[in-house]
Image (cartoon, rainbow, N blue to C red; front, top):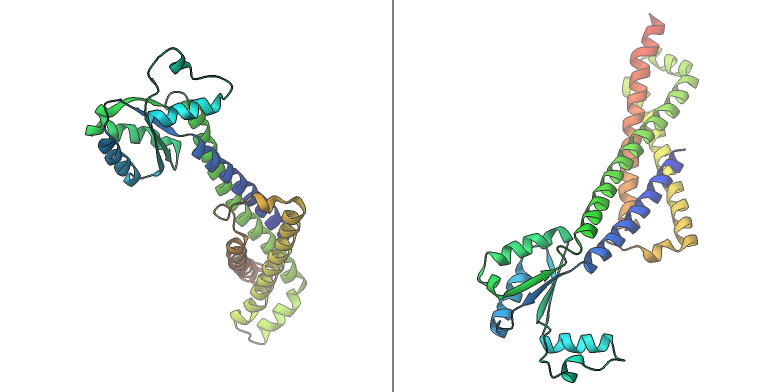
Length: 272
């Protein structure tokens, strides 16, 4: 049962890793585009780009000239002729700067920062703050929900594992009650009685951990999920030892608590 609890916990960790990876990809696709005035010189634009690259939470800054914007427009619609040259219109597409932040919520911080600098006079307009506000809000809400869900899962895992180990140790103590009384009568110190049960709890935790790890690897290999997981979001080489250490600590705590409670209450009350 402890192994199955760990397995379910690991599956939820995998799902959380997939969710976080998807959210990161979506965050990168929601960029902030700053349209620049035609009067902005290349020197001013270069200084702005360097400052933006040094700004916190900014991952990527890309400059697109008016000529490049026109070429991108024509490449998007190759079947159509250049409508501007056809009618003798000068290229009206503005030069722009695309900014990718670590989180869409930082878009407003970037625009507020630029508005308070001399670069503010270079801006013609922005895109994505209004158009993608609803998407940004949903992403932030989903990210907050997954974090809360993960915390709840961890607490449930710890609580469930403690109860399972304590129940197993209580059953073991009950079946060996006579043996424990004999040890007390011959003068065995409390730690001599505690150690076998603590060791038993540690063994339960280790076996359960390896059992859940085997099930997890089998599940990942059979479903091909491992190929879609990023090491930043789910690294089994890091999770496995941390889980093992945590399981052992929980096993020790649960075993000690169960043994202490039984020895200090049940046996003493029976003796009296």
